[in-house]
Length: 108
Figure 1 (spheres, rainbow, N blue to C red):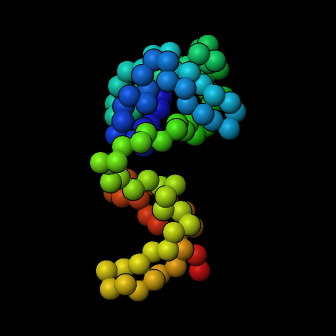
Figure 2: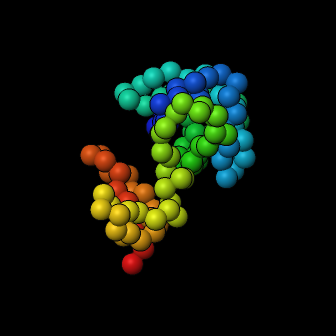
């Protein structure tokens, strides 16, 4: 079961290569399932083998789309956070997932 952190569902199209810290995986097939996706990968033969991949982060090369103004997590971490009055609140150390909205963790 894969949770996507993108609006580009084509990231899970058959033949797509996704990177992990354990090596690349190629998508064999995928289908939506309860707001996530069931995905079959070439190097993972069955559900038992898939358990050992639980929690592994999948990533892909950026899609160059000049009209896309989306701000991604990897662009936020390390950036300075300014409020609407121009006051700096420090560097973003991490983005913490939260059901309502993500939270920014700032350096002390």
